[in-house]
Image: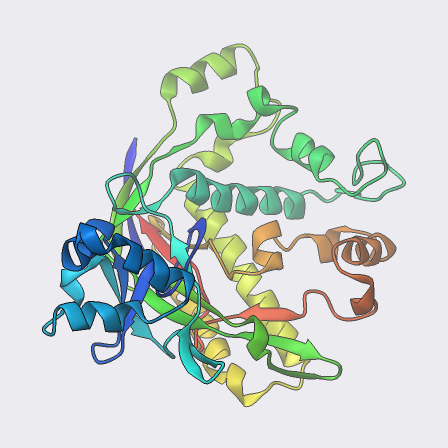
Amino acid sequence: MAKIQLTTITPLHVGSGIELQGNFEYLYFREANQIVVIDEEKVLNIIGKENLQKWIDIIGNEDNLLGYLQKRNAQLAPTDVAKRMMNIVGNAPTTTRNGRRAVKPIREQLHNGMGKVLVPGSSIKGSIRTAVLAGAIYDDEDSGFTRKRNNLVDRRGKFSDAQVVKKYLGNDPNHDIFRLLHVGDAHFTSTDCYHCPSINLMRDRWGFKHDIEQFVECIPPNATSEIKLSQPEHLIKQAKRKNYFRQNTSALQLPNLFENLRNHFSDVINNELAFWDDQNNPQALTDYLDKLEDIDKQIEACQPNECIIRMGFGTGYKNITGDWQEENMHENDLDDLEKSLRGKKYAGMLYPKTRRMTKDGQPLGFLKMSY
């Protein structure tokens, strides 16, 4: 078992699946430039049980809850109503609607039952798994993924990675080599609210598409945590005796694993940088590309006991899938795969055609690991 130290390099978001609604689940304190997730018990103490219907009416009528609370308590501070608080990085999540200032939803970061900021071990393991799979595909000189060989489709002829996973990781969950890798949960202490715009290809030019911008609760850069990463020796010995895994499990052992992760994520970054070399880059991408280059240099400087991975929201299609398809699939199959993933109105356009980042150009989800 190894203790792994984690340090966020850029904002990281692993979502709860919930969007926090302004004036209901959170309040925006403009003067403090803070988002306050509401503690219902604290709010009720200020309003009073006898005025509970007033609270319900404010929510239903989309009236100003913060203004009402400040009338009840002229010295109201964010901590008076807070379950937790976030600093705002970039623009505040506000808009003007029907002549009134309104607040936009915020994607909530996952927390555990005790209210601690949580990045599940399963999410970290998923990023590692994708990298190891992609590395195995690239190392195979005869990957041969085509629909004609039926290793890219399911029984109905729909695109599926099931055969790819079987070949490189194991025939089924019981024989999957990642049974031998146990990854613990990570806990962090605080979050911030980030304005995350999206840059899109619109016809023949790239630009920010403001109607799909989002506000996201993220673990900020330079936050630290520790997890346990283990490979149970008794399971490894049993598996060897019974020849349980056809695939080579050495890729999961330290320091081999960290070397594989360094190589994979450096390749993904360099593929992204090479892509933008061929585009008419908007000025807005300067900070984003500079940061990617800086992270790639950090990967090059990593010691054998260090690596950098990428995970979570906003990391993009190629990062999530491992970015192996373009070089390991037949061109016609790749075109058909992309068509199956998008609406007909986008036929013939570049895929993917979106990049998400923070307002100041930081790519999302980079995390350093060391032991």
